[in-house]
Length: 302
Image (tube, rainbow, N blue to C red):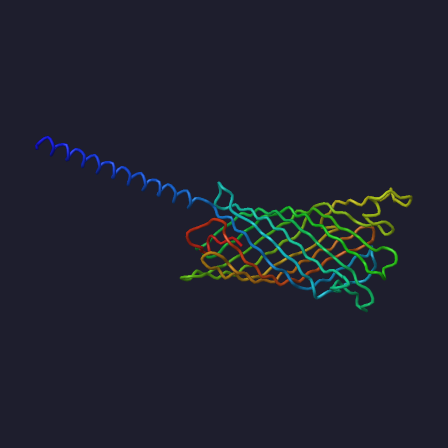
């Protein structure tokens, strides 16, 4: 009986020790997992619908200004803080706007007399890096720059006589800044923000009065070899200012944003001017692919 009692005590002790070891291992794994999760910087993804007006001119096509109240587009943004930094973040933005003059959907841009129309499409990719300052978990200030790739085309209607189509391609370095102020409530948050950016250096394609960039690509007896269609750009021949004012309603898993953006870009070469002026109303939804336990004004990105 004594031997049996001792054996039962030994088995019970071994079982208890094993259970304690298992609990400790599980607790350590959970703690390690929580530490790793809390240290991961969230990737924020934002999808935005664009709608607004445009004023454009290309003196290679003609010397008239064209306008539209039916400019439509879409924008996708992705960003996060760098892995080894709590202050430096990156942001990738891709956007597309268009207003096409087609038989079924005769939109496009019209001149002042409404006697001719042109179609337009623009594509833009912007990769930005910011340094971030946070004050009192409410105020965020970001300063940085971006590499911007811009492309598009304009095409005249059947009434166009000489120059019918032109294309643009630009690579620019932008200076950018952002300010954001937020409030956190029990189940939601509210942010007000403003962005501003301007180009200061890059390269661009340009048209000459008697030969556009597209005509220069095709072999022709009229190619003007004395002119180049690729120009260095800076404040002397390309200027612009973009700004955005918006408000974010942040919920637990996503944020809804409403904003107004003004985009202005003007350039000239060979006594020909071009400009693009857009006024856009934006409505977007942003989500975090993986993120913080709680969305706060101090960790919301855009």
